[in-house]
Image (cartoon, rainbow, N blue to C red; front, top):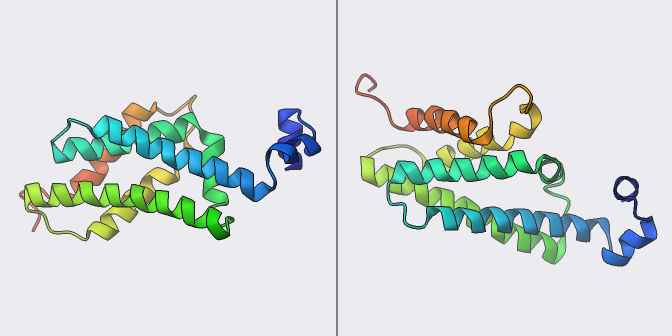
Length: 167
């Protein structure tokens, strides 16, 4: 809270006037972030029926938010388990919803292409690819979210959609 106070120019007492605790502030950051990502995703998926395109939209939505909000992403990655009580359960419910959306998208792809793979492993692998971008992305050197999402989607989808030469 002291670092936030210094960075924002607001007194520590002023921060505690608006946020009863560090946990309360962290809760609001996490709730806002995950709610926004899910809401934006639902809007973008509306009317899109191609399962592969829907997964590509999922990846783009995720990366655009992560790259546009790197400070929030660092907080979420490093403080993921810091919430307790009702705070933790409310954020966990939003995260589960987001996870289930991704599971549904991959299940749609599996059904439409008659594919065989573990949806759970594929979803968690995809999140692993996307969530660590904040540790390496350098906007001066690396491409933007749209370009990176296309490349990540290609890498990910080629892994779950084997070509004719694979058995």
